View 1 (cartoon, rainbow, N blue to C red):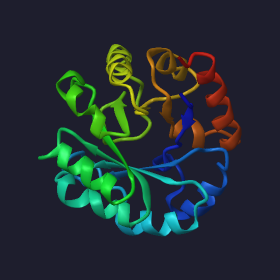
View 2 (view 1 turned 135 degrees about the vertical axis):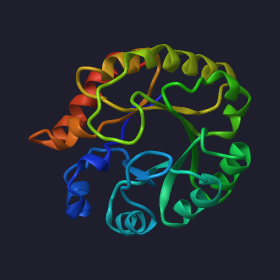
View 3 (view 1 turned 30 degrees about the horizontal axis):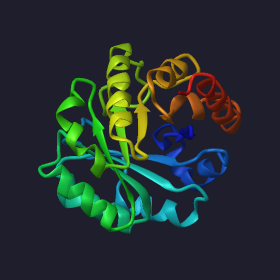
Length: 220
């Protein structure tokens, strides 16, 4: 299992996304939070911004779609240049079909779960996915406090993933910092989204390395 750090650009300077991406060369992916003012109470960025950043960034784009009707919109994010596209299962009408469509277009298909959404009903679907994202805050805002109540769910998701085999990544997003990342890794996560922790640091790239080291002590 390889450990990956995917800084959330939501916490970066939106007026200079390319410059901010250049400040974190050690990052594995750039996590882009797409919010639509409907599925979550915020409006951030969409296709044109991802397309522009994908052309100039060295890191691949990890698009997290916190939007309604991902069945309709998600495939376009692959075309815009995202290497991984995450849809929320709470918003998807036909998640299996959508995951297959994302994969068919050439990106990794990922399914996100809000804190109160259980993983168990989707066990049979895991083989259709490349990644599962467990939200450790309610989606919609950056800078929130990590919810410890999500840790048992991370562990249950890891157990189900291991049971089915295959190379499925387990991502956590929300309040991930030096204080919380070890707990996430211990529970079984291997891909970590950190926003404020990275971009509020004096040296964001050093923080990426530090987060990686902290998680590495506990990775399964």
